[in-house]
Amino acid sequence: MPFESEIGSDAPIGIFDSGFGGLTVARAIVDQLPNEDVVYLGDTARTPYGPRPIAEVRAYAIECMDRLVTHGVKALVIACNSASSAALRDARERYDVPIIEVVLPAARRAVAATRNNKVGVICTEATANSRSYNDAMAVAPHVELTTQACPRFVEFVEAGITGGDELLSAAREYLEPIQRAGCDTLILGCTHYPLLQGVISYVLGDRVTLVSSSTECAKAAYAALQRRELLHHNPREAQRLFLTTGSGDDFEGVGSRLMGGFVEDVQHIAL
Ligand code: DGL
Image 1 (cartoon, rainbow, N blue to C red):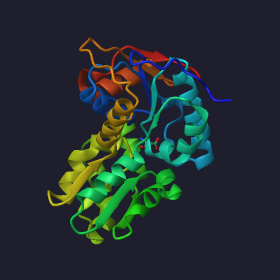
Image 2 (cartoon, helix red, strand yellow; image 1 turned 90 degrees about the horizontal axis):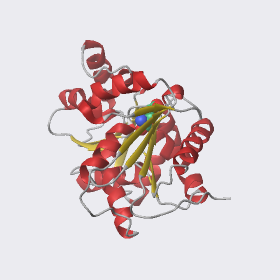
Image 3 (tube, protein in one colour; image 1 turned 90 degrees about the vertical axis):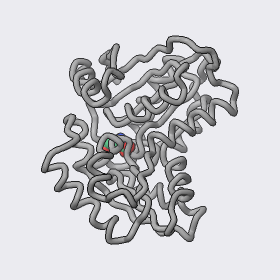
């Protein structure tokens, strides 16, 4: 039985991720749609999703979305590549509100951006194993895709680490196959990775175009709401609410450090 939600342009947008990574999507949405209220849920008690079996990620994702639906959201944003790879189809069947995800928008942008038809994607193991980017790129068979899982990147971000020798050496190791394949375009196929753009760009150099699944997802959110006439047009002070399954203080601390003043009003919830 699908959940129903009061859909109106005044309703908030629901966004979730396993932890802090989806904040890069939330911030891109707030930048591109500043009049929208957002409710963000970080499932930090169960992060990371990336090393877990797809069925488990799917179950967690559905629990997060069920919770967001109770806030009367007008759209659900799966701000996590692993969860998008695992739960998109179920979500579209289960909820009546538009579901926006990260994989297809990023894949489309990469296909448009590549000059040599060699695209790389860095992501979690769950996303790599699901082959969701291979499926999304099937419309462009002339493009060769190189996939590299980078499990430690999420650990760095969740610990609030975005620089230093250890991260640089992990980045060099993870990005070597991308360089060897001659990719001129790299999809940041995990929403935690925009927070590591500095080190990724430092290793790869300016000739490799980075495509952020977070920025592309925000554009897709705009398009989905515009098509359904659900955009909130009038200028106003929009509200932001942050929920976490972990410690509210930790979320606020790390979130504020990673995202400047963006994270406030954090509440702990149990799922
Ligand atoms: N940020 C998430 C993604 O885009 C997942 C990180 C994790 O929990 O492993 O895949």
